Amino acid sequence: MKYLFLGLAICLEVLGTSSLARSENFTRLWPSLLTVVAFTGCFYFFSHAIKEIPLGVAYAIWAGLGIVLTALVSVLFFKQKLDLPAILGIAIIIVGVLVINLFSKSATH
Image (cartoon, one colour):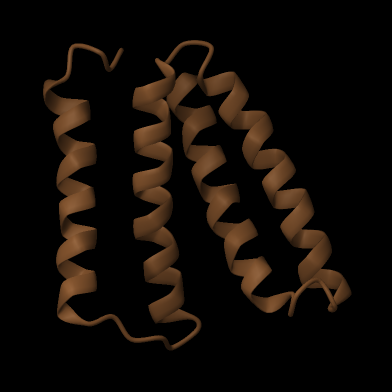
């Protein structure tokens, strides 16, 4: 369940961030409400995930995958471009998340 909670937190963070981009500084009602609801759910599920996953590990996974998925959303849905340094940086983040999950004794599975 701990990784299900973390996955839900990540998905809701990406939804909240994407909605925030469309809220126009909280001047548009529905994107603004979706932002608040998504981030509330995000932190709710993240709080459950860190009951069993060490905080540093959970946060690294949450932040890293959130960055990667938000970048993908920006490319696919908002038609934003990523240059080579951005792509390389995102690749390094993915490698970092993999190293934590595959090799760290701090990550509990």
